[in-house]
Image (tube, helix red, strand yellow):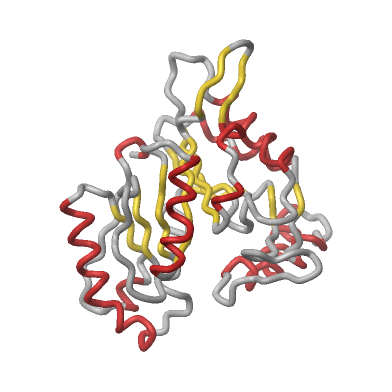
Length: 261
């Protein structure tokens, strides 16, 4: 398990983001964006690990494509145990500046992994976005000859931290992603949020890092109610380990959907 916790691996064929509504001319990056804060450090660490110069675009967090990483994304699919791969931990795949052909290369690699047809995929791929209205469901259909099918091992979710963000983004996601493949990531949870309708197929919760306890206290009761409702509705919940620090005394729940186990 890596530092993110709910996934086994991360892969970043695309790196960089201008933020929700941001552009190259006027970036609007989130103040709590961990990826943006870590971009220079991650680029330097990767350069040291592979013995190559630092990628300037990675360092500057400008959306760009690394096609050589697409093959590595599916390389571990032959393992016996299922794995969960977070694709795009250092980007938003549907943000401004990310080209459709970059995403198509990713879907193509995932679709090829699902063959032969009679063998279930050994990997589940998770993508999170703050711009679900940019999703085109046709992108997520894999075409082989005259057959097309939804990439059933792809799980798409929205990131939100407040009730307003949930209301804006969840309905848009549900319009494009079929049931059984939708995730609600409350990371960082910055205020009270009620469980959305239709229910998510996986609920991920995390506080802002570094943890600011004074900011977390107001949503303690609402968080407890949401967790209770998720339990009643049998929605699997993954709470990041930092939740114990943000909300002392809370019971840490770390579950995955059955298809990911």
